Length: 76
View 1: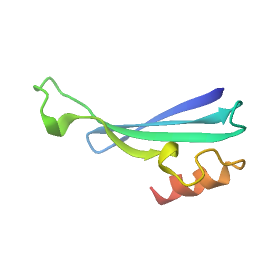
View 2 (view 1 turned 135 degrees about the vertical axis):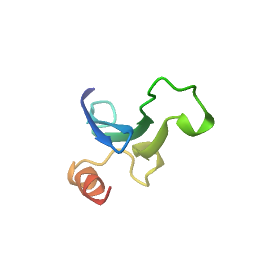
View 3 (view 1 turned 30 degrees about the vertical axis):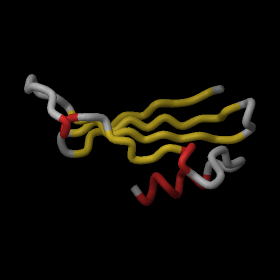
View 4 (view 1 turned 90 degrees about the vertical axis):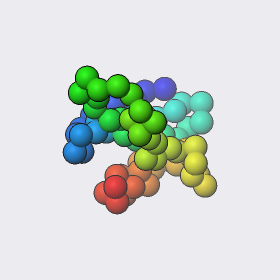
């Protein structure tokens, strides 16, 4: 498996994108997670990690072409 991790900010949240190739499944995968940036405040239920996209929730979780996920990134 090979993958790349990209991070960016959206408001006060950190967006973490993992995308790569899974050799055993012979396809691409991608997950996108939104993590609130805690500025020294106590954790609340609202400050939990949120999954924005997970390849395992898709009809074809390991597509052979990366364009499927690039389009999804464009939508988000």
